[in-house]
Image (cartoon, rainbow, N blue to C red; front, side, top):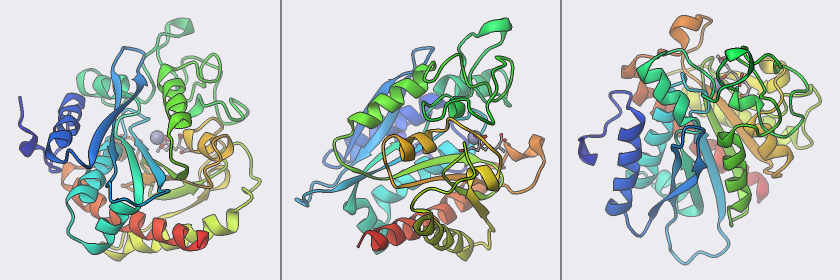
Amino acid sequence: NRRSDDYSWSEYHELNDTHRWMQNLVGKYPDVVSVFVAGRSYEGRELLGLRINHNDGRAGKQSIFLEAGMHAREWIGPATATYFANELLSSQQQEIMSLARSYVWYILPHANPDGYVYTHKTNRMWRKTRSPQDKNCVGTDPNRNWGFHWREVGASSDPCSESYAGPKAFSEPEAENLSQFLKSVPEPMFMYLSLHSFSQLLLYPYGHTSALPENHRQLEKIFNVAVGAMKRRYGTRYTGGNVYDAIYPAAGSSMDWAYGVLNVKYSFTYELRPSGYSFWTGFRLPAAQIIPTGQETTDSLVEMIKAAAQIEG
Ligand code: PAY
Ligand code: ZN
């Protein structure tokens, strides 16, 4: 059993390590941190997240939800989510402290815990959930399973496909339970963020159509600021845009659902490091890059949220 103090960003962690780290944070910051459980996975694991809220008497705070680990093999996502949570809690930088206090934060590092455990124990390249499907195949792509233009495009009806949309929208408890939790968040949701890898892209809706969302000018403005900030520290180059054009048609993502159904006007997905095309190395970002990725992504998020807040006035 590792002590919470041993938790570091020099290595990738197993699910239980990160869950224990989160539980320990409640003891360390009892006035600020609580954990939430957005239901359970197919195999019964908790969708465990951190709620960070400084009770400083500010009324009417909005929430920001950050989710990672939807795809099991994209290990840098959860590592970056926990890095960022740790920054919100322990940074002495004025900007980050202010960001921590200005919103009610919900951070879910592992939106697909069964898949993540499977990548540690059995198959490092697993992407989907772990529910049994037809044709003796296993798993649904949880980022094709959300009930907004479900399976219209860029999503498979073949249970053996890596982008299998599932037998119906929200067939997966991971997506269904998270969507119910999102609906139950009491504070108005200002921003929805999803961390994936790889390709170094910043994406906004939609995935089901090339038609741009109604506030695309604002999203583009925020995009430019966020990509500029990503580059500041280490020169890391991001491109991107709307999912459909910037990467490929893909209906049924959590981001599109948050935008289209929950009406969260600032919804973004980061495809984190590395860039490049190698499928084999793309998901195996060396652990030595967790901290640099965490730092530059924090830089980007800080500027992104400031830019969005400025637009809101
Ligand atoms: O909305 O994030 C989105 C859709 C795009 C991602 C997806 O397919 O869900 C992009 C891929 C991902 O992160 O899963 C990109 C990676 C490299 C992949 O596996 O194709
Ligand atoms: Zn992904």
